[in-house]
Length: 140
Image 1 (tube, rainbow, N blue to C red):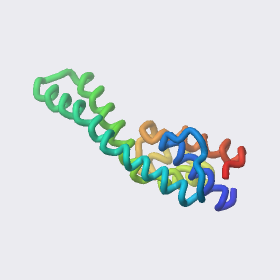
Image 2: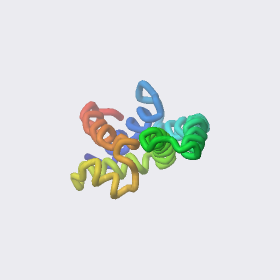
Image 3: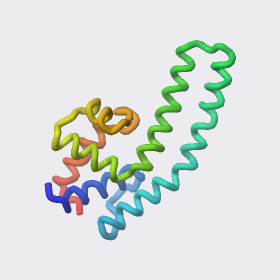
Image 4: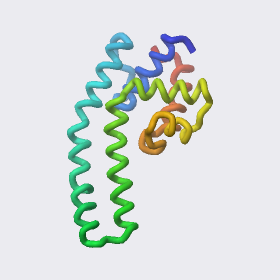
């Protein structure tokens, strides 16, 4: 895949992550910037999603809650926190995933270890899979 083709795929993937339902107008750089701004705008709402589970975790831990209850809250907290971190890294994270998946043939566990992200939270398999069909559809 050419550099321009990879950039087109990254722009499309960023737009999908930013919840755009169609390819946006503009240059690839404009599309990437627009998608990143949209992701950045969602960060306060994601932080708000952490308030209740974090508060509940502290209360439950102090009250001696079961390990199962605490684990459920931990998973919820880590999921949202990982999304915030992945959204901040934006196109750079998507590019790294694509390169590690397609060029080095690492699986989602190998990619997560290489990049220091959770394979589930970052949806590594879905991200890597979504790029190839997109490039074959001629997204530009």
